[in-house]
Image (tube, rainbow, N blue to C red; front, side, top):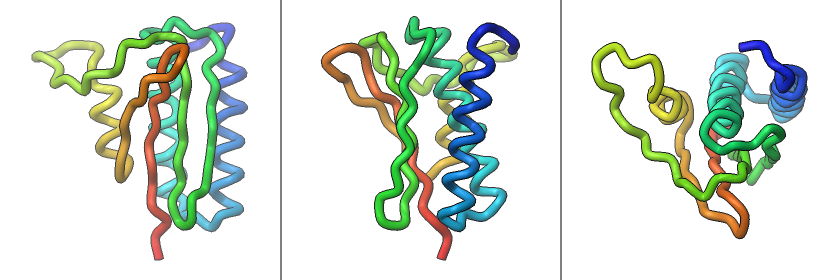
Length: 120
């Protein structure tokens, strides 16, 4: 995937990695969060009709919450891909990499988020 949005994806990943390092997350958790973030941003581009999705990274006590906002009001459906389908696996991947995820309607569009708990 290389398009005009690739630099913003790189910046978002680097910012997330840096924040998680400072918060003391393990390297494997950081890698999982980066991959989940990429999936949400790509979904915002492809399905949310948003060239520049808003990314918000929060630390709530010992939990990381990453949210990506887009312009589409269509809430995601974590479907099971049929056969060898080339799409439809992104949210399953997010579900497998994170502790929780969800989507919330907003005044304009929606917010899709995931959470990772900090290992003790």
